[in-house]
Image (tube, rainbow, N blue to C red):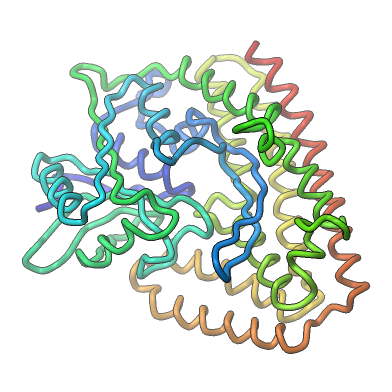
Length: 404
């Protein structure tokens, strides 16, 4: 049972990319081009890039979390994808259940009706390389019970398959809304969509969150531009119990935190540079939507911000330490292998995981930076984050002026 003529288009950002493939299959096109919606445009309509910083702790797991897309209420709402669809005037049905059997039944019924669906999964439970520390969605477009094969579309354009057990396990892992799926409906005769209002709403959401944060008052400083200031301060504050010197002391904890920050910035899908280059692409397209210049000028600032984000990620694991340099190469290699080879990358990815585990053991036994060098590193990271803040604060101000 395959959805006829469905084609995976790949993805840089897994949610916008999944929706792009589905909308292209349904024949939805943007009125300003007459072509299917780009992933960049969908990403921006949902609010686009963002910034959040906090530390995630669960049992023996401790790591910084850097939100690189706009923060939305995903629990219990499927806000990011649902918002994009609703802004484009598309119908949305969200499937939700606590039962694996019921989830499978709904999935099969949807496919039997000739429609693909977007499912949320725990990337750590996928047999291939998933999104580091972030929500992960994929498109299910085929099901063969006799051969125990589920056809899915993800970041790779190559054909991907899972077993029923693999899909069921991934749909109920930690961080994945349990057995949630989304089905898109296109109102009759509305396949050509004018995106002007949707783009303006996305721009406003982005500016609002970057300037004012997200969530309750006591939590707002963890998001938007203030989050950059908070993160920079916590890197070098030796008194705050939430600071890096307390939470991630010299040794394996600091290596893990630095590796996680690098991976989230550079390898969360194929967006790279904290999705700033992707957001710049959205702003360039916004000029075409509104048929006026202005957004492209701000896009150049986000290209600059993207460059600074990449330099920041590189600085977390300095090239002057060969083991750190190799760790960065291996983490990025996992992503690139999957994007190019799909399921054929699994064995190589497992080898890379073993190599990274070995590096961690060596670093844990004899950390390659002295206490003074660690302090110098954290100070450098602080300065880099503050530089990003200044560039993005100016860009947001200019963007806000354009949409008034």
